[in-house]
Length: 117
Length: 108
Image 1: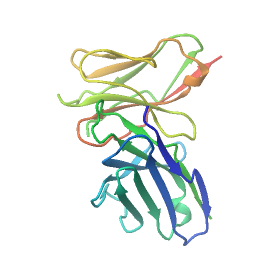
Image 2: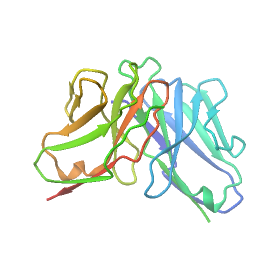
Image 3: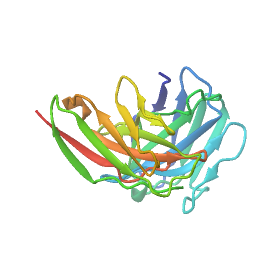
Image 4: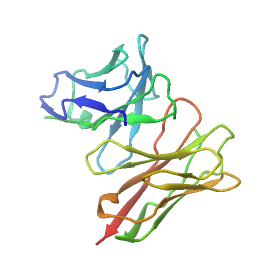
């Protein structure tokens, strides 16, 4: 099956710093990637939809200036958490859809655990 | 996005079949029914999806009611590795929106 990777798998940073998380589709091209956030014991919450070469579409309540998304190529999307604060600590998960999805499957990365001190 | 309703938790024994229900009474004609599962500290894993007919793959079976207002994910012979949160999701538009899912516990 298609593989999506994320880097780093975990990160600890100080309050006020920015953190970049990479999401890569390893063996397929993805015109659309998605970013989710998950707090402990809760479900995944969709943050934004990212289309290659265009601006991301953010879900209601998600600050686009705080969570910067760049989808510069068909295999790479990045999420930058700017001026991170402890309340941004969470599990961030990306997913990617095949450019020509033969089965409409959406493949998820393993997640990145962010801890802001 | 159409809403799904799942039990918060279920429990089963190893090597027994498991039937995970999902209600989606507001499903529209073009919504696909997707199932994903998430193991602790991992990203969700695709399990199966269908539109109208029952579907089988190596992981599970999906039984869809004739009126499409409910569906059941069937794990034919549960193992300890099947312990996870299972999400039933309707997708018509582009995005997958997750509900609370069912936390499945497998007893040895």
